[in-house]
Length: 543
Image 1 (cartoon, rainbow, N blue to C red):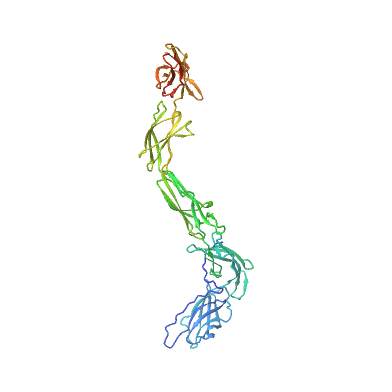
Image 2: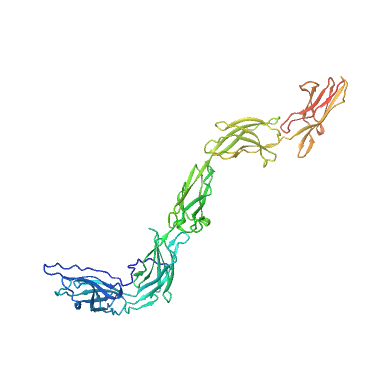
Protein backbone atom coordinates (compact mmCIF):
# COMPACT_ATOMS: atom_id res chain seq x y z
CA UNK A 1 0.00 0.00 0.00
CA UNK A 2 0.99 3.64 -0.34
CA UNK A 3 -0.02 6.33 2.12
CA UNK A 4 0.73 10.04 2.65
CA UNK A 5 4.21 10.51 4.09
CA UNK A 6 4.40 11.28 7.80
CA UNK A 7 7.74 12.71 8.77
CA UNK A 8 9.23 10.95 11.79
CA UNK A 9 9.53 13.07 14.91
CA UNK A 10 12.34 10.96 16.28
CA UNK A 11 14.31 7.92 15.23
CA UNK A 12 15.12 6.70 18.73
CA UNK A 13 13.24 4.19 20.86
CA UNK A 14 11.47 5.95 23.69
CA UNK A 15 8.83 8.54 24.43
CA UNK A 16 8.91 11.89 22.70
CA UNK A 17 9.40 14.89 24.95
CA UNK A 18 8.70 18.55 24.34
CA UNK A 19 10.72 21.00 26.42
CA UNK A 20 9.15 24.20 27.65
CA UNK A 21 11.38 26.59 29.54
CA UNK A 22 9.49 28.80 31.95
CA UNK A 23 11.26 32.11 32.38
CA UNK A 24 11.75 33.19 35.97
CA UNK A 25 10.01 36.21 37.37
CA UNK A 26 12.14 39.25 37.75
CA UNK A 27 14.78 38.19 40.25
CA UNK A 28 15.59 40.24 43.27
CA UNK A 29 19.16 40.71 44.25
CA UNK A 30 18.82 38.02 46.96
CA UNK A 31 16.34 35.54 45.32
CA UNK A 32 16.80 33.10 42.40
CA UNK A 33 13.69 31.03 41.70
CA UNK A 34 13.96 27.43 40.46
CA UNK A 35 13.52 26.81 36.72
CA UNK A 36 12.06 23.52 35.41
CA UNK A 37 12.70 22.48 31.76
CA UNK A 38 12.70 19.49 29.40
CA UNK A 39 9.63 17.90 30.94
CA UNK A 40 8.75 14.63 29.17
CA UNK A 41 9.16 10.91 29.00
CA UNK A 42 12.47 9.24 29.72
CA UNK A 43 14.02 8.61 26.29
CA UNK A 44 15.45 5.33 27.52
CA UNK A 45 12.18 4.02 28.94
CA UNK A 46 8.84 5.56 28.04
CA UNK A 47 7.30 4.39 31.34
CA UNK A 48 9.11 7.07 33.41
CA UNK A 49 8.85 10.85 33.69
CA UNK A 50 11.97 12.98 33.46
CA UNK A 51 12.76 16.70 33.77
CA UNK A 52 15.65 19.09 34.29
CA UNK A 53 15.75 21.68 37.11
CA UNK A 54 18.13 24.43 38.20
CA UNK A 55 18.11 26.64 41.29
CA UNK A 56 20.45 28.58 43.56
CA UNK A 57 20.04 25.97 46.26
CA UNK A 58 19.48 22.23 46.26
CA UNK A 59 16.16 20.89 45.01
CA UNK A 60 14.14 19.10 47.66
CA UNK A 61 13.41 15.69 46.02
CA UNK A 62 10.46 15.05 48.31
CA UNK A 63 8.80 18.27 47.16
CA UNK A 64 8.57 17.33 43.48
CA UNK A 65 5.00 16.83 42.29
CA UNK A 66 3.92 16.12 38.68
CA UNK A 67 0.36 16.43 37.40
CA UNK A 68 -0.35 14.37 34.18
CA UNK A 69 -3.59 15.18 32.36
CA UNK A 70 -4.74 12.91 29.52
CA UNK A 71 -5.07 14.89 26.31
CA UNK A 72 -8.56 13.80 25.24
CA UNK A 73 -11.94 15.45 24.71
CA UNK A 74 -14.48 15.37 27.51
CA UNK A 75 -13.34 14.31 30.94
CA UNK A 76 -9.58 14.53 31.29
CA UNK A 77 -8.27 12.11 33.94
CA UNK A 78 -5.50 13.59 36.08
CA UNK A 79 -2.74 11.53 37.70
CA UNK A 80 -0.40 12.85 40.38
CA UNK A 81 3.11 11.49 40.42
CA UNK A 82 5.56 11.90 43.31
CA UNK A 83 8.86 10.33 44.19
CA UNK A 84 11.74 11.44 41.99
CA UNK A 85 15.42 10.55 41.93
CA UNK A 86 18.37 12.63 40.73
CA UNK A 87 19.89 10.65 37.81
CA UNK A 88 22.53 13.11 36.58
CA UNK A 89 24.08 16.42 37.56
CA UNK A 90 23.66 18.01 40.98
CA UNK A 91 20.74 18.88 43.18
CA UNK A 92 21.17 22.51 42.08
CA UNK A 93 21.45 21.68 38.33
CA UNK A 94 20.44 18.20 37.38
CA UNK A 95 18.09 15.75 35.71
CA UNK A 96 15.42 14.02 37.76
CA UNK A 97 13.50 10.85 37.00
CA UNK A 98 10.38 9.31 38.55
CA UNK A 99 11.42 6.57 40.94
CA UNK A 100 8.66 4.20 39.94
CA UNK A 101 7.11 3.33 36.57
CA UNK A 102 4.18 5.58 35.76
CA UNK A 103 0.88 3.91 36.53
CA UNK A 104 -1.38 5.74 34.10
CA UNK A 105 -4.75 4.22 33.49
CA UNK A 106 -4.91 4.95 29.77
CA UNK A 107 -2.40 4.98 26.97
CA UNK A 108 -2.13 8.33 25.25
CA UNK A 109 -0.50 11.74 25.35
CA UNK A 110 -0.43 13.50 28.71
CA UNK A 111 0.02 17.22 29.30
CA UNK A 112 2.40 17.44 32.22
CA UNK A 113 3.23 20.12 34.82
CA UNK A 114 5.96 19.88 37.45
CA UNK A 115 6.24 21.83 40.73
CA UNK A 116 9.01 21.64 43.33
CA UNK A 117 10.73 23.56 46.15
CA UNK A 118 14.40 24.29 46.68
CA UNK A 119 16.23 24.46 49.97
CA UNK A 120 15.26 28.15 50.33
CA UNK A 121 11.60 27.22 50.05
CA UNK A 122 11.29 28.82 46.61
CA UNK A 123 8.85 27.51 43.97
CA UNK A 124 9.32 28.05 40.20
CA UNK A 125 7.83 31.25 38.88
CA UNK A 126 6.13 29.08 36.29
CA UNK A 127 5.40 25.40 36.56
CA UNK A 128 7.47 23.18 34.32
CA UNK A 129 5.37 22.09 31.36
CA UNK A 130 5.69 19.38 28.73
CA UNK A 131 4.08 16.21 27.50
CA UNK A 132 4.51 12.52 28.12
CA UNK A 133 3.81 10.14 25.26
CA UNK A 134 2.54 7.14 27.18
CA UNK A 135 2.09 4.92 24.13
CA UNK A 136 3.20 1.60 22.76
CA UNK A 137 6.59 2.05 21.13
CA UNK A 138 7.96 0.05 18.16
CA UNK A 139 11.35 -1.50 18.70
CA UNK A 140 13.22 -2.59 15.56
CA UNK A 141 15.84 -5.32 15.40
CA UNK A 142 17.68 -7.41 12.80
CA UNK A 143 17.06 -4.74 10.15
CA UNK A 144 18.70 -5.66 6.82
CA UNK A 145 18.61 -4.32 3.24
CA UNK A 146 19.00 -6.52 0.16
CA UNK A 147 21.05 -3.76 -1.54
CA UNK A 148 22.59 -0.42 -0.76
CA UNK A 149 23.25 0.49 -4.40
CA UNK A 150 20.41 1.14 -6.84
CA UNK A 151 20.33 1.84 -10.58
CA UNK A 152 17.85 2.13 -13.46
CA UNK A 153 17.34 -1.63 -13.67
CA UNK A 154 17.31 -2.14 -9.88
CA UNK A 155 15.52 0.92 -8.47
CA UNK A 156 14.06 -0.70 -5.34
CA UNK A 157 15.32 -1.78 -1.97
CA UNK A 158 13.80 -4.57 0.12
CA UNK A 159 14.08 -4.25 3.89
CA UNK A 160 13.58 -7.17 6.27
CA UNK A 161 13.74 -7.40 10.03
CA UNK A 162 11.65 -7.68 13.14
CA UNK A 163 9.64 -5.21 15.14
CA UNK A 164 8.46 -5.59 18.72
CA UNK A 165 6.06 -3.58 20.86
CA UNK A 166 7.30 -1.93 24.04
CA UNK A 167 4.52 -1.23 26.58
CA UNK A 168 5.38 1.75 28.82
CA UNK A 169 2.91 0.53 31.45
CA UNK A 170 4.70 -2.76 32.05
CA UNK A 171 8.12 -2.21 30.50
CA UNK A 172 7.61 -5.47 28.63
CA UNK A 173 8.54 -6.00 24.96
CA UNK A 174 6.49 -8.46 22.91
CA UNK A 175 6.94 -9.66 19.30
CA UNK A 176 4.90 -7.84 16.66
CA UNK A 177 3.56 -4.34 16.38
CA UNK A 178 0.19 -3.24 17.67
CA UNK A 179 -0.22 -1.01 14.64
CA UNK A 180 0.13 -4.14 12.42
CA UNK A 181 2.14 -2.31 9.72
CA UNK A 182 5.58 -0.88 9.13
CA UNK A 183 6.61 1.46 6.35
CA UNK A 184 9.72 1.72 4.20
CA UNK A 185 10.50 5.26 3.15
CA UNK A 186 12.71 5.76 0.12
CA UNK A 187 13.88 9.32 -0.34
CA UNK A 188 14.14 10.36 -3.96
CA UNK A 189 16.58 12.85 -5.40
CA UNK A 190 16.08 16.49 -4.52
CA UNK A 191 12.71 17.82 -5.52
CA UNK A 192 11.35 14.44 -6.64
CA UNK A 193 9.32 13.56 -3.55
CA UNK A 194 9.37 10.50 -1.32
CA UNK A 195 8.02 6.99 -1.71
CA UNK A 196 6.39 5.35 1.28
CA UNK A 197 5.37 1.72 1.05
CA UNK A 198 3.73 -0.29 3.81
CA UNK A 199 3.81 -3.99 4.70
CA UNK A 200 2.04 -6.10 7.28
CA UNK A 201 3.94 -7.34 10.34
CA UNK A 202 3.73 -11.09 10.90
CA UNK A 203 2.79 -12.63 14.22
CA UNK A 204 6.43 -13.19 15.13
CA UNK A 205 7.21 -9.54 14.36
CA UNK A 206 8.96 -10.19 11.04
CA UNK A 207 8.31 -8.04 8.00
CA UNK A 208 9.44 -7.57 4.41
CA UNK A 209 8.81 -4.35 2.52
CA UNK A 210 10.04 -3.03 -0.84
CA UNK A 211 10.13 0.54 -2.10
CA UNK A 212 11.81 2.52 -4.91
CA UNK A 213 14.54 4.70 -3.49
CA UNK A 214 17.16 7.20 -4.58
CA UNK A 215 19.22 8.53 -1.68
CA UNK A 216 18.34 7.04 1.72
CA UNK A 217 15.98 4.57 3.31
CA UNK A 218 14.62 3.69 6.74
CA UNK A 219 11.80 1.61 8.23
CA UNK A 220 9.32 3.12 10.65
CA UNK A 221 6.06 2.40 12.43
CA UNK A 222 3.19 4.79 13.09
CA UNK A 223 1.90 5.32 16.62
CA UNK A 224 -1.76 5.81 17.34
CA UNK A 225 -1.62 9.60 17.00
CA UNK A 226 0.35 9.42 13.75
CA UNK A 227 3.75 10.09 15.29
CA UNK A 228 6.47 7.86 13.92
CA UNK A 229 9.42 5.95 15.29
CA UNK A 230 11.84 4.07 13.08
CA UNK A 231 15.30 2.86 12.29
CA UNK A 232 18.24 5.09 11.52
CA UNK A 233 18.42 6.15 7.85
CA UNK A 234 20.79 4.21 5.59
CA UNK A 235 22.40 5.97 2.66
CA UNK A 236 21.73 4.24 -0.66
CA UNK A 237 24.25 4.82 -3.45
CA UNK A 238 22.78 5.68 -6.83
CA UNK A 239 24.43 4.60 -10.10
CA UNK A 240 23.55 6.79 -13.10
CA UNK A 241 23.34 5.25 -16.55
CA UNK A 242 24.40 7.17 -19.69
CA UNK A 243 21.62 7.80 -22.22
CA UNK A 244 21.46 8.68 -25.89
CA UNK A 245 18.93 9.63 -28.55
CA UNK A 246 19.27 7.78 -31.86
CA UNK A 247 17.34 9.37 -34.73
CA UNK A 248 16.24 7.13 -37.61
CA UNK A 249 17.57 9.82 -39.96
CA UNK A 250 19.99 12.43 -38.72
CA UNK A 251 19.79 14.26 -42.06
CA UNK A 252 16.62 13.97 -44.13
CA UNK A 253 15.09 15.69 -47.13
CA UNK A 254 11.51 16.56 -48.05
CA UNK A 255 9.87 18.75 -50.64
CA UNK A 256 8.33 22.11 -49.83
CA UNK A 257 4.71 21.62 -48.82
CA UNK A 258 5.15 17.96 -47.88
CA UNK A 259 4.89 16.51 -44.38
CA UNK A 260 7.90 15.04 -42.59
CA UNK A 261 8.15 12.72 -39.61
CA UNK A 262 11.19 12.73 -37.36
CA UNK A 263 11.48 9.62 -35.19
CA UNK A 264 13.99 7.57 -33.28
CA UNK A 265 14.82 5.52 -30.22
CA UNK A 266 15.85 6.59 -26.73
CA UNK A 267 18.41 4.26 -25.15
CA UNK A 268 20.44 3.79 -21.99
CA UNK A 269 23.64 1.91 -21.27
CA UNK A 270 22.53 -1.11 -19.25
CA UNK A 271 24.46 -1.42 -15.96
CA UNK A 272 23.93 -5.18 -16.16
CA UNK A 273 24.92 -6.01 -19.74
CA UNK A 274 26.88 -2.86 -20.63
CA UNK A 275 24.94 -2.65 -23.92
CA UNK A 276 22.74 0.12 -25.30
CA UNK A 277 19.15 -0.80 -24.55
CA UNK A 278 15.81 0.88 -25.43
CA UNK A 279 14.41 2.86 -22.53
CA UNK A 280 11.26 1.71 -20.83
CA UNK A 281 7.86 3.08 -21.84
CA UNK A 282 5.62 4.51 -19.14
CA UNK A 283 8.36 5.94 -16.89
CA UNK A 284 8.15 9.75 -16.64
CA UNK A 285 11.94 9.87 -16.26
CA UNK A 286 12.27 8.44 -19.79
CA UNK A 287 10.25 11.03 -21.69
CA UNK A 288 11.95 12.52 -24.73
CA UNK A 289 11.90 16.29 -25.20
CA UNK A 290 11.84 17.31 -28.87
CA UNK A 291 12.70 20.91 -29.66
CA UNK A 292 12.09 21.93 -33.24
CA UNK A 293 9.72 23.68 -35.67
CA UNK A 294 6.69 22.47 -33.71
CA UNK A 295 8.05 23.98 -30.48
CA UNK A 296 9.13 22.08 -27.37
CA UNK A 297 7.16 18.95 -26.56
CA UNK A 298 7.75 16.02 -24.20
CA UNK A 299 6.78 12.62 -25.60
CA UNK A 300 6.20 9.42 -23.69
CA UNK A 301 8.07 6.52 -25.20
CA UNK A 302 6.27 3.61 -26.81
CA UNK A 303 7.46 0.01 -26.91
CA UNK A 304 11.07 -0.32 -27.93
CA UNK A 305 11.89 3.16 -26.66
CA UNK A 306 10.31 4.75 -29.75
CA UNK A 307 9.29 8.39 -30.14
CA UNK A 308 8.44 10.74 -32.99
CA UNK A 309 6.52 13.74 -34.24
CA UNK A 310 5.31 15.01 -37.61
CA UNK A 311 5.87 18.38 -39.21
CA UNK A 312 2.65 18.94 -41.17
CA UNK A 313 4.10 21.27 -43.81
CA UNK A 314 7.73 21.72 -44.82
CA UNK A 315 8.45 25.41 -45.39
CA UNK A 316 12.25 25.40 -45.36
CA UNK A 317 15.34 23.90 -43.76
CA UNK A 318 14.87 23.06 -40.10
CA UNK A 319 16.30 20.96 -37.26
CA UNK A 320 15.30 19.08 -34.11
CA UNK A 321 17.09 18.43 -30.83
CA UNK A 322 16.05 15.32 -28.90
CA UNK A 323 16.89 15.13 -25.18
CA UNK A 324 16.38 12.37 -22.64
CA UNK A 325 17.42 11.63 -19.07
CA UNK A 326 18.78 14.01 -16.50
CA UNK A 327 16.37 12.56 -13.92
CA UNK A 328 16.34 9.63 -11.54
CA UNK A 329 18.95 7.08 -12.53
CA UNK A 330 19.63 8.49 -16.00
CA UNK A 331 22.30 10.89 -17.16
CA UNK A 332 21.20 13.46 -19.73
CA UNK A 333 21.71 12.62 -23.40
CA UNK A 334 20.80 14.43 -26.60
CA UNK A 335 21.18 14.36 -30.38
CA UNK A 336 20.26 16.48 -33.39
CA UNK A 337 18.44 15.75 -36.63
CA UNK A 338 18.13 18.11 -39.60
CA UNK A 339 15.77 18.47 -42.55
CA UNK A 340 16.77 19.98 -45.90
CA UNK A 341 13.83 21.35 -47.87
CA UNK A 342 13.85 20.48 -51.58
CA UNK A 343 12.49 22.84 -54.21
CA UNK A 344 9.42 21.31 -55.84
CA UNK A 345 10.51 20.95 -59.49
CA UNK A 346 8.13 21.53 -62.42
CA UNK A 347 8.82 20.58 -66.07
CA UNK A 348 6.96 22.16 -69.01
CA UNK A 349 7.33 21.01 -72.64
CA UNK A 350 6.02 23.93 -74.66
CA UNK A 351 6.97 22.67 -78.15
CA UNK A 352 7.41 19.06 -79.22
CA UNK A 353 7.15 19.44 -83.00
CA UNK A 354 7.95 16.15 -84.74
CA UNK A 355 9.41 16.06 -88.26
CA UNK A 356 9.03 13.37 -90.85
CA UNK A 357 12.68 12.56 -90.50
CA UNK A 358 12.13 11.59 -86.86
CA UNK A 359 13.45 14.77 -85.27
CA UNK A 360 11.59 16.18 -82.25
CA UNK A 361 11.84 19.68 -80.82
CA UNK A 362 12.54 19.78 -77.09
CA UNK A 363 11.57 23.25 -75.91
CA UNK A 364 10.35 24.15 -72.43
CA UNK A 365 11.36 25.22 -68.95
CA UNK A 366 12.50 23.70 -65.65
CA UNK A 367 11.14 25.72 -62.73
CA UNK A 368 9.94 25.32 -59.12
CA UNK A 369 6.46 25.72 -57.66
CA UNK A 370 8.11 26.28 -54.26
CA UNK A 371 11.70 26.95 -53.34
CA UNK A 372 14.70 28.08 -55.36
CA UNK A 373 15.33 27.53 -59.09
CA UNK A 374 16.42 23.92 -59.80
CA UNK A 375 19.66 23.43 -61.74
CA UNK A 376 20.98 20.67 -63.98
CA UNK A 377 20.09 19.05 -67.29
CA UNK A 378 16.75 17.66 -68.47
CA UNK A 379 16.56 14.16 -69.95
CA UNK A 380 14.58 13.16 -73.06
CA UNK A 381 13.45 9.60 -72.47
CA UNK A 382 11.76 7.00 -74.67
CA UNK A 383 9.65 3.92 -73.88
CA UNK A 384 7.92 1.35 -76.05
CA UNK A 385 4.76 1.17 -73.90
CA UNK A 386 4.79 4.51 -72.04
CA UNK A 387 4.92 2.82 -68.62
CA UNK A 388 8.21 0.97 -68.21
CA UNK A 389 11.63 0.71 -69.76
CA UNK A 390 12.27 4.43 -69.99
CA UNK A 391 15.66 5.03 -71.61
CA UNK A 392 17.44 8.36 -71.85
CA UNK A 393 18.05 9.25 -75.51
CA UNK A 394 19.24 12.83 -75.04
CA UNK A 395 20.42 15.21 -72.30
CA UNK A 396 19.22 18.79 -72.65
CA UNK A 397 21.06 21.65 -70.93
CA UNK A 398 19.11 24.44 -69.20
CA UNK A 399 20.06 28.09 -68.87
CA UNK A 400 20.08 30.17 -65.67
CA UNK A 401 16.31 30.60 -65.86
CA UNK A 402 15.70 26.90 -66.48
CA UNK A 403 14.80 27.37 -70.17
CA UNK A 404 15.87 24.87 -72.87
CA UNK A 405 15.36 24.57 -76.66
CA UNK A 406 16.96 21.96 -78.91
CA UNK A 407 16.20 19.35 -81.58
CA UNK A 408 16.91 15.64 -81.33
CA UNK A 409 16.62 13.00 -84.06
CA UNK A 410 15.28 9.67 -82.83
CA UNK A 411 16.84 6.47 -84.09
CA UNK A 412 13.47 4.78 -83.77
CA UNK A 413 10.70 7.41 -83.91
CA UNK A 414 8.08 5.14 -82.33
CA UNK A 415 6.56 4.53 -78.94
CA UNK A 416 6.43 7.24 -76.26
CA UNK A 417 8.52 10.22 -75.18
CA UNK A 418 8.73 12.19 -71.94
CA UNK A 419 10.91 14.79 -70.23
CA UNK A 420 12.54 13.78 -66.96
CA UNK A 421 14.48 15.83 -64.39
CA UNK A 422 16.46 13.55 -62.05
CA UNK A 423 16.52 16.11 -59.26
CA UNK A 424 19.48 17.35 -57.25
CA UNK A 425 20.62 17.84 -53.69
CA UNK A 426 18.28 20.84 -53.55
CA UNK A 427 15.35 19.91 -55.79
CA UNK A 428 12.89 17.07 -56.37
CA UNK A 429 12.62 14.95 -59.49
CA UNK A 430 9.99 15.87 -62.08
CA UNK A 431 8.48 14.43 -65.26
CA UNK A 432 6.44 15.90 -68.06
CA UNK A 433 3.35 14.29 -69.55
CA UNK A 434 4.00 11.39 -71.93
CA UNK A 435 4.00 12.11 -75.69
CA UNK A 436 2.70 9.24 -77.81
CA UNK A 437 4.34 8.85 -81.23
CA UNK A 438 1.24 7.68 -83.09
CA UNK A 439 2.58 7.57 -86.71
CA UNK A 440 2.92 4.09 -88.12
CA UNK A 441 6.21 2.64 -89.31
CA UNK A 442 6.33 2.06 -93.09
CA UNK A 443 8.46 0.14 -95.54
CA UNK A 444 8.86 -0.04 -99.34
CA UNK A 445 9.27 -3.67 -100.20
CA UNK A 446 9.56 -5.81 -103.34
CA UNK A 447 11.11 -3.06 -105.44
CA UNK A 448 12.00 -4.38 -108.92
CA UNK A 449 13.26 -2.65 -112.09
CA UNK A 450 12.90 -4.90 -115.18
CA UNK A 451 13.79 -6.22 -117.59
CA UNK A 452 17.44 -6.54 -116.84
CA UNK A 453 19.59 -6.32 -118.65
CA UNK A 454 17.72 -3.97 -120.96
CA UNK A 455 18.62 -2.44 -124.30
CA UNK A 456 19.15 1.31 -124.38
CA UNK A 457 15.99 3.16 -125.45
CA UNK A 458 13.71 0.32 -124.48
CA UNK A 459 11.01 0.58 -121.78
CA UNK A 460 12.00 -0.08 -118.12
CA UNK A 461 9.26 -0.88 -115.57
CA UNK A 462 9.70 -0.13 -111.82
CA UNK A 463 7.28 -1.89 -109.38
CA UNK A 464 6.99 -2.26 -105.60
CA UNK A 465 4.70 -2.12 -102.58
CA UNK A 466 4.30 0.44 -99.72
CA UNK A 467 3.34 -1.20 -96.42
CA UNK A 468 2.70 -0.09 -92.84
CA UNK A 469 3.31 -1.98 -89.62
CA UNK A 470 0.26 -2.94 -87.60
CA UNK A 471 1.15 -4.87 -84.52
CA UNK A 472 3.32 -7.74 -85.73
CA UNK A 473 2.00 -7.74 -89.31
CA UNK A 474 2.48 -5.60 -92.39
CA UNK A 475 -0.35 -4.35 -94.61
CA UNK A 476 -0.38 -2.40 -97.91
CA UNK A 477 -1.12 1.33 -97.87
CA UNK A 478 -3.01 2.77 -100.86
CA UNK A 479 -3.33 6.38 -102.00
CA UNK A 480 0.16 7.42 -100.83
CA UNK A 481 2.83 9.20 -102.90
CA UNK A 482 6.01 7.23 -103.54
CA UNK A 483 9.05 8.84 -105.21
CA UNK A 484 11.04 6.80 -107.76
CA UNK A 485 14.77 7.62 -107.59
CA UNK A 486 17.78 6.77 -109.81
CA UNK A 487 21.53 6.93 -109.17
CA UNK A 488 23.68 6.46 -112.31
CA UNK A 489 26.57 4.04 -112.13
CA UNK A 490 29.67 5.80 -110.73
CA UNK A 491 27.66 8.79 -109.49
CA UNK A 492 27.02 9.86 -105.91
CA UNK A 493 23.94 12.01 -106.44
CA UNK A 494 20.45 10.54 -106.51
CA UNK A 495 17.93 11.92 -109.04
CA UNK A 496 14.20 12.06 -108.38
CA UNK A 497 12.65 10.54 -111.51
CA UNK A 498 8.90 10.66 -110.82
CA UNK A 499 6.16 10.32 -108.22
CA UNK A 500 3.57 7.57 -108.28
CA UNK A 501 0.44 6.98 -106.20
CA UNK A 502 0.03 3.58 -104.59
CA UNK A 503 -2.95 1.55 -105.60
CA UNK A 504 -4.74 -1.40 -104.08
CA UNK A 505 -2.71 -3.17 -101.40
CA UNK A 506 -0.05 -0.43 -101.70
CA UNK A 507 1.29 -1.54 -105.08
CA UNK A 508 2.77 0.91 -107.51
CA UNK A 509 4.07 0.68 -111.14
CA UNK A 510 5.81 3.24 -113.31
CA UNK A 511 7.65 2.96 -116.71
CA UNK A 512 10.76 4.75 -117.90
CA UNK A 513 13.05 4.75 -120.99
CA UNK A 514 16.31 2.95 -120.26
CA UNK A 515 19.23 5.29 -120.90
CA UNK A 516 22.18 4.25 -118.72
CA UNK A 517 23.32 1.78 -116.11
CA UNK A 518 22.35 2.55 -112.51
CA UNK A 519 20.41 1.76 -109.36
CA UNK A 520 16.68 2.32 -109.03
CA UNK A 521 14.93 2.81 -105.62
CA UNK A 522 11.70 4.17 -104.11
CA UNK A 523 11.19 6.45 -101.09
CA UNK A 524 8.16 7.37 -99.03
CA UNK A 525 8.04 10.78 -97.30
CA UNK A 526 6.46 10.87 -93.83
CA UNK A 527 3.00 12.29 -93.30
CA UNK A 528 0.89 12.95 -90.24
CA UNK A 529 -0.07 9.29 -90.17
CA UNK A 530 3.01 7.45 -91.39
CA UNK A 531 6.75 7.54 -90.89
CA UNK A 532 9.13 7.77 -93.87
CA UNK A 533 10.93 4.80 -95.39
CA UNK A 534 13.23 3.94 -98.35
CA UNK A 535 13.45 0.73 -100.35
CA UNK A 536 16.53 -1.27 -101.16
CA UNK A 537 18.14 -0.45 -104.55
CA UNK A 538 17.87 -2.56 -107.74
CA UNK A 539 20.75 -2.25 -110.25
CA UNK A 540 19.93 -2.43 -113.98
CA UNK A 541 22.47 -2.99 -116.76
CA UNK A 542 21.61 -0.97 -119.88
CA UNK A 543 23.25 -2.18 -123.14
